[in-house]
Image (cartoon, rainbow, N blue to C red):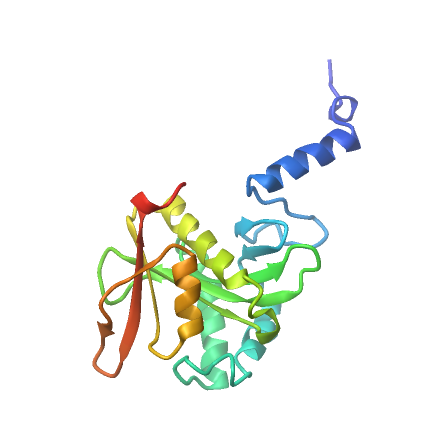
Length: 207
């Protein structure tokens, strides 16, 4: 006997299931908008964090053409951003870390990018970061992205500490990290600069 699933799941029931899944942050991907091979880290009704596709290189690189966006970032040439994007695509095959795109859940408009990686300065710590298009500043997205990345780190790995660093003058990003649950530590001193240093531990986050 062969059962037809359509006899049991009506469009109305499917919609209820979809709403429930989105409420609890499970990712619903549309066959018409997303490549099934692209991994998603997080989705709510405002934005989705997912892998970039190769066709989105221009979106990624254009983000860094705005001098206000790159004000507190180390200088990189256009060629270096292209190389960064190519490395990001390659990293998707190596593990849970990398650079990911942030897109509007409803329109698929590009909001910005974020990263999750091993922290180079302190073994065992994971680092998060984000860069948003200027039109999305001041909307609370950076705080929610930071919280989502922290959750992802603790779910995808067994690590216990997530950190973030900012330029000492980048007060806006420091406020974002504090709203996202990070605590400020003593400044991080590197050979060429000093940075504001923030940390959140697994025991402080509800997973």
